[in-house]
Amino acid sequence: MQLLDILNFTERLEALPRTGWLNAGVSPCENISSHVFHVALITMWLCDQVEGVDEACALKMALLHDIGESLIGDLTPESKRLLGDVAHEAERNAVEKIVGTGEWLELWERYHRRECPESKVVKAADVIHLYSKALRYSEQRGANVSEFFTQRPSTGIPSADAVITDIFERWGKTTK
Image (cartoon, rainbow, N blue to C red):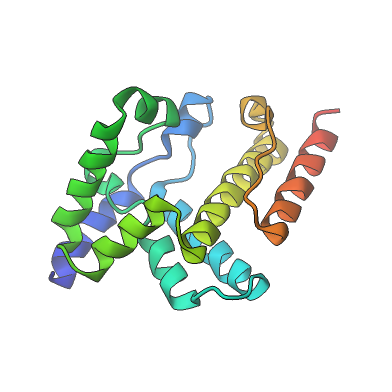
């Protein structure tokens, strides 16, 4: 695993827009690289709120969680459902091509299994960022993002759920 080889792939994330925003008619929209940065930042904040989480491990997971998209693109949840295991296997193969078979691949796999506290914190950060971004697009651009606010998710992490509740309340005020 050579750094320049990894960067060759990951720098592609700067040019890849988030598909969900494009499908919602938000253009231009954030790229995957920006999303990953914000997920890492939110992860760092959540690690200060949640006991028993290995912050270094969680931050690595946050940085790696969408790395495979540099090769396969940003699949929507609907596409992932339709593709089933094929989507996960393709993304795993992409991650392995980028980072090899060592610790980083294992961290990516642990994130996707959602069995450890670190993976749950990173997933909560991912969810927070989705709704935070939707709120920003609604407030700043008047984007119709109501499809994202049909159901309030629960992450099982009280501090994350409080942030999500706050976002939903703010969004409710912007739509009145």
